[in-house]
Figure 1 (cartoon, rainbow over the protein chains, first blue to last red):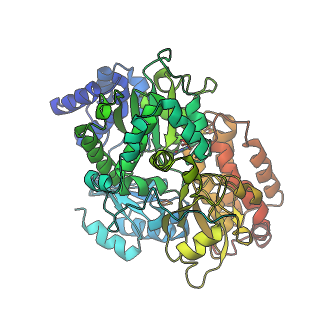
Figure 2: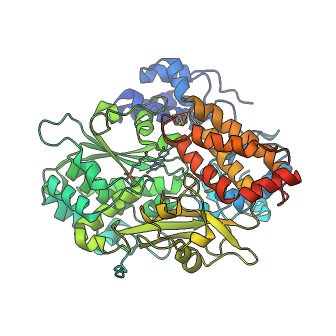
Figure 3: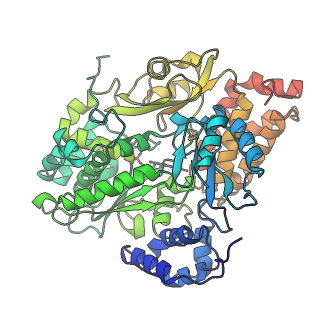
Length: 160
Length: 429
Ligand SMILES: Cc1cc2nc3c(=O)[nH]c(=O)nc-3n(C[C@H](O)[C@H](O)[C@H](O)COP(=O)(O)O)c2cc1C
Ligand code: SF4
Ligand code: FES
């Protein structure tokens, strides 16, 4: 799916991670930010984690244990756009299931799946803290609330 | 009971268009005046005002804020650096109050943190913000830059001799990071498992140094406490707990939202007056009053005042003060299943009752919901409420999860039994 899981950081990534470390009280405090830098460039974090660990002065296995803890650090390739659909209580009450049915039907994938054209990955997420706009979801960095199946169709169009 | 002062010290200056209040407008509305006042006071004097104000923590547990600050080692003998952390993880399902505050007025939070930093003689402050709050992150980043540029942060704040460095840390999604000792582990770049206490965090917190951690809303109250003084601040409330509260309502109501109201506002007033009542054709059966980890309150008890003591009289607690309304077309078994799946997914797996018990509970609830429940299942669930309860686990995630489950089994017993008797979900879930 991607050519970039081969495990070497680019110069740009190294520079950004080094700057993050320089701005931290201790190098390892930059761990999750460093992982996010890699993810911003590649969509997910692959074998580069070994080099990132070296920069942070951590054992690779230790950084792995940090990376796998967070639900929003991806250790597998994802699509160009990531849909995070809230499956927590207020959204569940106000229509989560109908939205999920609609999304999985339209995209032809289940939760955790990526469309064949690598356009979308669909993931469940815990309460987005937007419960007054439930049901809600995020696409990439954008929050979308008060959703209906019709609104979802229009929203997906914004993400080619 | 005397009527509280109808003032909104936290949100009164918010813009009607929902845009964040900028630094100049914040100042015009009286912002940073409390800071100037505080910088002229001794740290201990501020902490005393906070104690006298009866401000209690808005992060869920309601710990008295001034008392917490008093534990901080002070003076030249204290180990340094000392830390202040602001918990902006807000991942408790049903909760969105801290987001409203940060998006509405970032400088309110910063002013609260700078005053707290002065009162605690802290060297560094961190805001631990959840990833999903992208808008709040951008608003805070801008406000922090403005504050540094205006001499409100950094060395020698406003010429007072007090200094504070403030860092914004953005997390990557995991409910457990909101538990304070877990949050420190996350900030240190370790796998964020919780830690044992004692030692108390004011002895050994972030990087093993003295630390005070407070919730966003708690810190947003600090300028009002200092500005108004303890007595006037207490008078904002209907009850003995001081101040106002950012309450919220979600679920199938006409106007879901969040509002600043006197502490001790009733659940009924919130539902009927502020949230506009139930959507057409629906009846209210009850609510989870303070985020997912609080006991369900039945509609008949909605005259209860939402504060730290009064809600206990109806078997619940304030938690985060954001209530999730349960309507009569929502299946209580399905609702509890949803909650237990959340807690099971977010468990860190450290202790056996939580790691093994939560998925087991979810499996049983799923079976009942799908008509495969058996006589005896409810007793097994009740047993788990005890097994995962306080004292059996490392952190409060599991006991918190048992609050809606235990109360749900009690309040909706007949609905559970019907699922088992009729071998299906009466709501068609
Ligand atoms: C699993 C778990 C998650 C928590 N999440 C949060 C949170 O997102 N925000 C918060 O302020 N407190 C959260 N808390 C409570 C904190 O541990 C802590 O008590 C609180 O931040 C203290 O602030 P306060 O005294 O100002 O209320 C959580 C606790 C647990 C056990
Ligand atoms: S109660 Fe659950 S979340 Fe808390 S430490 Fe134990 S296993 Fe982890
Ligand atoms: S439950 Fe979905 S945003 Fe809170």
